[in-house]
Length: 311
Image (tube, rainbow, N blue to C red):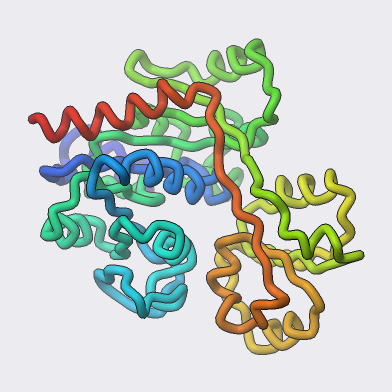
């Protein structure tokens, strides 16, 4: 039981391992859909020009085992869709996967990295991260949710106390200050915790999407509602094929998709589809996050890495 395991860690009966490298953990209390991938990308983009940065993921649904560092032969099958997205987007960082995070960190440290971002590892208590970033969505905050199977939480709400930074994600772009204060009151942050608010920013739509009378939207993410709402706001006409998060497309599904004229998908799904669908028919819409107090957020992260190196 997660609460008992966490209690044993909190009381020191089970020890978390510390490492001599700054580790930033990005995670959540709920099951998927909080925006971890764009947050990891934001932090990578923030740190990579000043520090030798690496990401370490579990590599969910990959066909391989053990520690793997992404190289020119990497694919969604060998390292997972999200790590593949990091690898294709950032050519100046190290992207690695290992279900055993302790082993993965040890291997990465052999390459003299100066900062490691742990992707989706908030419940991975074997590693003691130096900075924990907890994400929770505006539409379904953890303080209103319940542990599985009643709700969507992986662990009780009390787990939020381990966070150093709490980010309320997928907010309306014009969320008023008064509503932010109401949410902060419900979060009841500890003295050491800072609360930020973020929203999704979409890249320009591919011109093909605008010119087409209709297209097919394919999603295999936890919660595509924000993307669907955005596309509808642009008065675009599309059919939506919705699959579960990290969906493995079977042969019959691929054959069906090949018959479509134009497909728009998410960047994560694109990593799994690009080797199967004609590239002239397949497009994706990149997203990024924007924060309400980016300077304060950025400083907190950069100071953490810099101060760690000094000691």
